[in-house]
Image 1 (cartoon, rainbow, N blue to C red):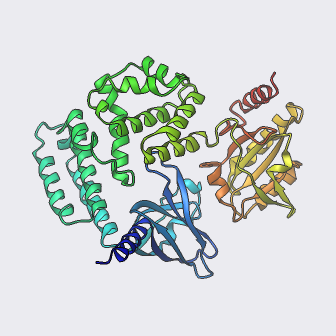
Image 2 (image 1 turned 90 degrees about the vertical axis):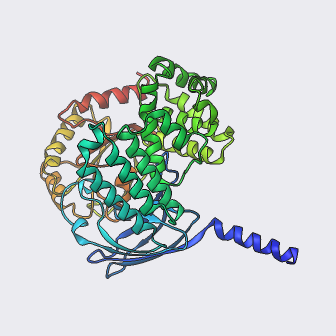
Length: 463
């Protein structure tokens, strides 16, 4: 073969493996002009979510979009704020029929069932095989729970593992085989058929790290959550001192190096270090700045490109909505049709009140908020944000009581609720005059909210 032709073929093949097109179509009957998103994890250790494609449903509820990915990934289809799971594969196409029973109804947006849909996936059987395996796996757990966890005879577990390997990993696609392998590994571990050391050797140390396989990463995180308690590699005090060490990650690396098997795999050990730091980030004994510094060290200096990405994503995720981090901005419509922005409140403390129109306790809280504001000499502003378009009830109540602060509606800007991680109504967030978070998820007005507000205002003012 001519060498130049061979080079061209190799280049074209390389490019084709980088990213491949995917087509997604579907219908959500009765859901006209709604936001549709495809969401994946930036990496499946940090689980930092990112939207990789979005569109709007048309007047009939139909939608269509195209995107490109490099590898099979766990993903969500989101209608508004409700999400349902599926698996994205390169060159595949998908047809969704979103069922209406989960996208209507009352209650907290986040408290309803996951987005429910039927799905036809043209992906060489990846979606169907995973669904079938999950049914088999869950049925086995349900029907054999006592045997799995209490019986010394694990022959039933061993036979199930063999049957599932024969059914799902022979001549199957790599993602499915790995998904099944690590699901069954977790079963062997949970049933104590195989101990920690055997699992470590067989599935993790000096084995490929499957960064894009959700079952691998889920098991990895679960396994190493309890591994060190059993092995007693270090004491709690030693771990905290190593995490808080301001010089470098070497102190943390040194205590993990005590484990002879972990010492053999730098890549895996580095991931474990990130998991330990992330898990302890909100620990009162841990210096947050030290964690971020060490993650920065990994992001810039790791020998493994994938680990650099994981570190980068952890840095973002751990600092989301933390005290002194930037508050998500907004530009919403008030009851008088004026636009109100968070920027309008520069140099002022702001108490954001997230409510729903049919939330009865929210009305009661509005009176308490007004009282607290008066008692504090109007040192902070109040802004009420109503989820959705229906604000008449809240506005009417406010007008009857003479409350004159802005009542805003999210309207189509429902992602603001996701940005602030609002999962129940009412919820309260306090914002500093410089536009940063003072405190997320304040106590209710009748549960010492006033003390928190005063504390954070004094802290910001250096008092």
